[in-house]
Image 1: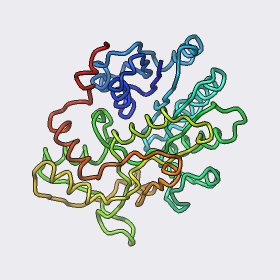
Image 2 (image 1 turned 60 degrees about the vertical axis):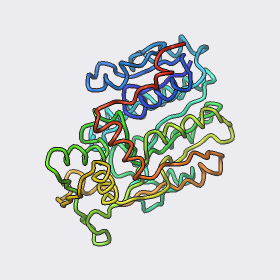
Image 3 (image 1 turned 30 degrees about the vertical axis):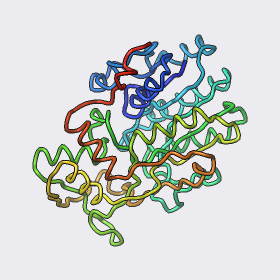
Length: 333
């Protein structure tokens, strides 16, 4: 069996679909399935079992001999969350528990880290293990992710294969439930539908023009392709931390214009002040260095921002459709 935690969420639910499409039918989904807003992401998936997040450690102890691989994508992902007790419980201690269970059971593990660990980018965006202790995340969420990365690297006992992926700005289907934390593509689509225009945060730094704040935007399908590549190529010597972005930073103006274009609309863009509660922790530039990913044999080609947004808008945002298995993979054989 393959286990996906966070399977009701954004990336986890798309990964579950991809596994079903690849004919992995012994699939176990783990999450808090009581969240109604996430139900459309997973209710249609025909899987072996659904396990509540709280029950999963005990479940894994009982079923470890049947599990071949574990994707741990579940986490508290709100970058504005200030409750460090909650973040430490869900992002740090829970992940430590899963790590230790994988060590005891001899299971390979992929887990979700974050580009939020890089803070303001002054230390660069290189996924070297040597810099983890020097990174200064800008918010409690980023600290919780970096704290786990540092803890994992310090462990004498590790899963025989493990990889922590620093996700950059992921967008694509199945993020409808994310509210304020949804991608700017989704926010742009909804705002344009409602008002005909899009308001972007103005720059509060003299070295960035309005709308030229830059992020590494990566489509969720490309993220899942990389995760699946590492599942298939679980080389112990390649265990470690990896950046997972497109490798190319693009401006918010690029993103918004691409969204207008996919919607068949003429861009109408204005600027508003960045909210004060995130202004001091706002990243102005991110771009994944993919050197390590490529050196370790991952040849996944990342789609352009324009093509990714075009697909997302036309096949999901316009229709309201979640990502579902293609017909051939929709039912168990």
